[in-house]
Image (cartoon, rainbow, N blue to C red; front, side, top):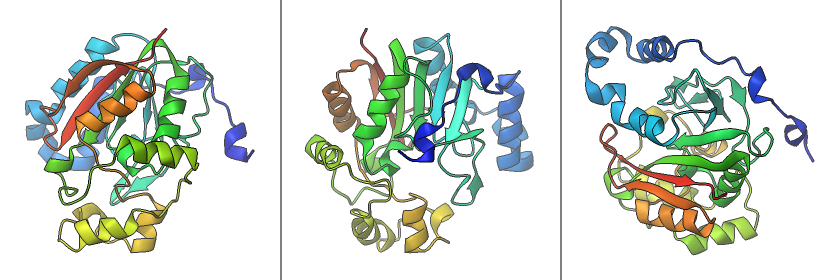
Length: 256
């Protein structure tokens, strides 16, 4: 057991934001500057649809966001913001706690919801991470997954990841820094001129070290299949997220 596995946090000790609205406006301003004055009035930029899903399916209780990145759609007055890295591409993370998603340092049944947005596709062993997400959910708790849709992202030339593939990765206990998909990424993304601009300054080594490539490629159908395999109840599925065009969303519930 390494030192990371031994760390344990308590939900009550986390410094939640007192006002979610002002925190959201502050981080949006930091990212966009004065453009925020216009964009904040634009409904898609406020992510009202996505925030509404959280309000509908997890209206109360504390939540955990895995891999928060530079912005969040979660209510920060009741959500723990976590990440494995302090920066992603050219953006600094707004997280307050660091850990890898496969080793969540909280007790069983700690959260009413767990959310990740454009994170799971970067993780070499997604079933291992999902397994720990389910562990920390209370019975009836919700798992929110916002993910890039293969057909509407730079993954459009890549093959979809099957359930059999992620089961094999789990059984082989594939490591966090697995490099299996690096060459596929360079062949079907970088060499086709589809490299995301915020990662373009990183070398191949740095891309792998920071988990900046997409290890897996999905549509909502493969993710539903994966969550059902884990015995979760599917609550909501949409192939399109109204306020994030490149994404789909699946919401599932931990059975009692």
